[in-house]
Length: 279
Image (cartoon, rainbow, N blue to C red; front, top):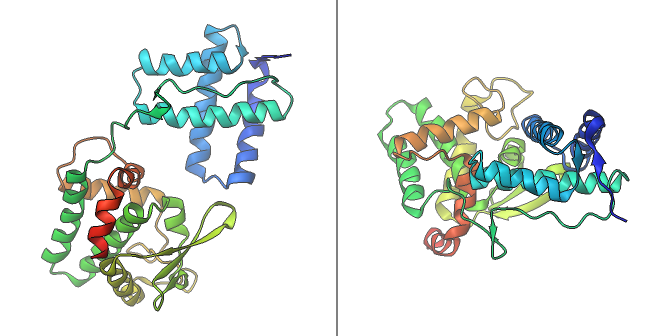
């Protein structure tokens, strides 16, 4: 028999869910905050619009409301859909709901998501990396050139290898094998995978960056962190986003894209670009 949940104890269920996700998926602080806000807004809407009773149909109505009335971007709707899908699964597993069918996403058309409206086109990606390379070539200050080199390596890892920002920030100098060209990446819950840097140019930049790394080392505590700030401390997610924003502006890209959109854009024309980078 199917049951629905009365949302009176939303604080407890949200906290329980977020805690479970931190333990299972290793959420960073920024993602944890986003999950919490998404669920709080969902519960507030349900309390005001649907008498506090929640099931998968009500959640779908909320997503429809966000899309049609609030006119949120497809990428935002899809992100919230994933959070709510995890949440309903958690509630069912805890016995708060039963008989739930799979949650549907309103931006799905014929089984495929509509193209995210802030993904970068091929021309925009080309302009982005041209802006990075142009700045590097034109800089005369050696230290600024090293910073630009660091930024170039980070952005190419995000785009060409689909590395998450959180994974990027966990990288250490010893994770890159200079002989094999393989980068060891630690994902959530410390799961490891090896990525072969297929581009000869990217491998050369990585080797050069590791050679320049000593100029950024200020404390033995962080000497093995691959991407350091100008003052020798590990980069934060905000810093990586600011780097992306800087070169997006320099490339003349006006859409509200993020580093994740740069990473996702690769899937649209991966084959042709991989062939180019390998040649």
